[in-house]
Length: 67
Image (cartoon, rainbow, N blue to C red; front, side, top):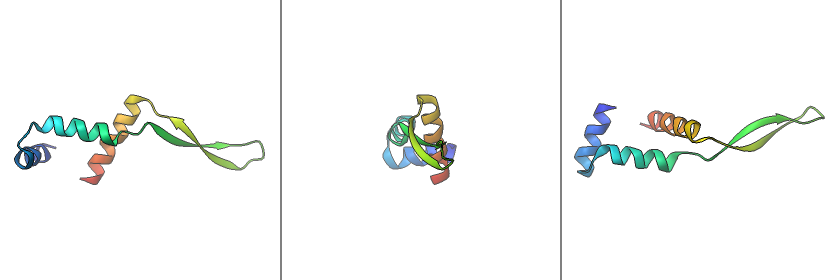
């Protein structure tokens, strides 16, 4: 994380925390997909709304995996 912050600061010459916050905000999902079983036994994927904390956690996880 510290190397990433230092690299962001060198490349952009701006506050790296602002860049990280903006990246998290842009990547944060609002809707997720959950599997639901219907009466006949088959499964379907149903869209559900994701809370802000869970969305932020997903965004941070995705950014760390991509780096």
